[in-house]
Image (tube, rainbow, N blue to C red; front, side, top):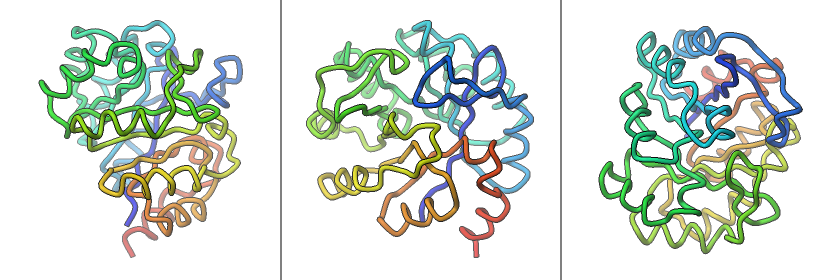
Length: 240
């Protein structure tokens, strides 16, 4: 059964969602802690938190919000956005993150990423693979690299990476349906991978389709906040 991971994106301490990663297309949904508490009340155990200010600023900005969530809930939180230095990753873990998602640094400073993978272990490091036009995007999705998705993944799977969060940027925040063919291709190529699909989820049917395609996990956010997914109904389906 697919693992369900609701998402909270943070700007200025508030829960927000962007469309296609565009900071100018932002919708504010209120308190991150209130949302986290609601997820926990229903029964969810995982949470994906993204510091969008951090992703843009190239250092962690909303560590206090992360700390509040991890202090006030028992959710297992993976955190990303703005982790660029040893001090950043240490701060993320100090603020209570169980795992961190690292994207840009894996492209721009591979030796640093590999050092973190060795130091903290493959269970605590999630490789972020944000894709636009088949290539990895970095720095809050403001830049496209020259790295193609599958060779990029192979390099790090060979180095020990087990967990990958793959976001199809053209789908993210659009409620247009996930890039199932892309995720299936990744799983066919690397069947041992714990792939977390992200982007475009608009309904429980989308999540059921990802499950049927054999995708191990899914991150979803905007569909929650726009009322497209009933969290209790989704939880009941998974736990039937």
